[in-house]
Length: 408
Image (cartoon, rainbow, N blue to C red; front, side, top):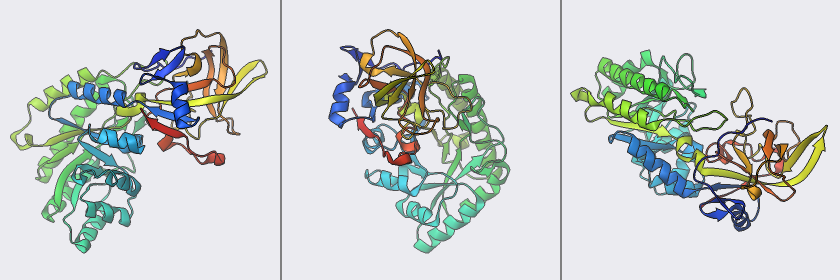
């Protein structure tokens, strides 16, 4: 038997079934027209953002990184709850524009921006987080050609990273951002060139559960940002401090203590120089806001035994939930929180492997987990599916197509 991760709070049981937003999963599947199906709880997203605001200092603003989940109803709902949106492509720019969102509240990061993407973002009034000196030169030339004053910030590649993070986005050679030592000169040049100087973006890593690691990272980010601007002789209108806030996926994971993070950040901001009293400070979060609010539902289509092991074969798989299969950056595969949603209140009686419908041994949703007796037609729930699920999986693999999605 292998353990599963902790099921997030906020779910209930109705007549022995998993319930999401007060509705049994069978009802949700029927409304959606079948499985596989991602279900996102609007109430859980709202509660998470409210809890975060309560824990953070009043002057900290929250940006949503839409790459975590770009399902249009989720975007529409969350746009009313956050202070800004962070995008990473021209396609995501179009998604945000379709909402009628204030483009002055949008920033665009990511290496390899095409000229067409730069032009569209500049014309829309989006802040560009520049990833290289070459990108800065291209952006300035494009803005001159279209007759627009560009809103430009610099993404910094710091000399440190977020300790214990799942993916390290800073420290050492990276495709992301400009090495910190070269940033003051570019910042000075942009300000002198008459650009609309928007400040710095410093993103060091993701998926950290240690409050101490996040506190240390935020302190280093603030010190670095102030040092860069002091050396460059420029103001710091905005500082995007990145995120890194993780959620518990696996057995033994504990939730991040955001209250402790907030207290330490308040202490750090209390003694700012006069020069930085008007700086706007942002944290950029994706999975922390939406990850635990999503559930992936997939139906068992076959039950079989091979060499003494039971396999529950579903109509879903890694083409929708790549991360849960262990193929999205993990070194050692571990089980996400899973359950037999049709028998949510029943005790476990057997050990089974839960797999998808693809013809590859990589298509695993859970290995050797203890579950109630499950039969063909039962629904499996994979939790922590609100982030990097549908939007980060190869939905067209083997021609199965995307999963349904719904916000409840």
